[in-house]
Image 1: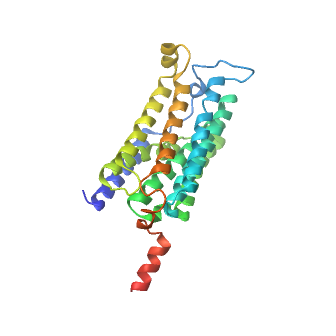
Image 2: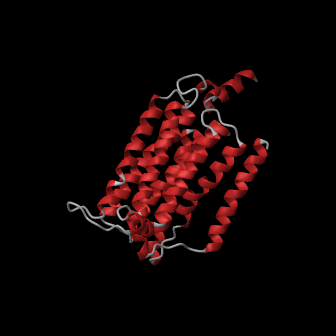
Image 3: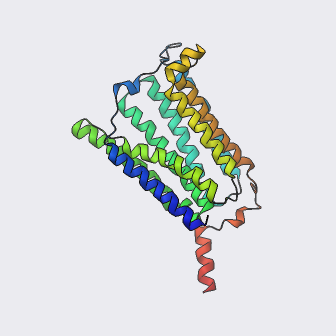
Length: 273
């Protein structure tokens, strides 16, 4: 499949996802969204296991930031990947604070960081496989602003009518999960492989499945809930990507030059004309 055909297919998938959410109607927070199977406190810390399970993801995020900082990747890749690890770390910290005192606002802020992190991951993917402009500073800033606006949409609805709508945040969190695997199968990469992205997707789906089976997992194991396991599997997702950032082919220098920065590319075009 040509790159043009692949991009048209990915765009069609994104549009279909957006149309589907519009047809679904507003998605509001429910009281049950704040209920978790494991509510056991330890040493005065409520939902202790859920809180502590956020720590490995923070470690994975810091590991990823260090790996990207040491890499020889071009700026067009380092920028969105570094932003992804920063936002992942912030998401885990926000999630830990949310579990200490669950609230609608805490839930939305946590999902804001999750949506922004997934957006950065998608930008990094397309910067590598389509065009370095996806990893430019303006593109990263636009992605973060879009996630912020999606969160503001919920807060505005909650303040004006008491009915905040989560659909924009859910769209940003979900659509990269459709586009990245499809793109990994149809668009060649220089620093990451199809296996890397499919492994990431598999771990992510396992994490979300565990979160859905919160009470069932606790009943089956007798000690760990599905939500706690979800946090640990998400740490595995970030850890897998951090590892790849540290050992990707051409990690130091060999392939960095094959991805030309947007400014360098424009200069080359100008001087050759």
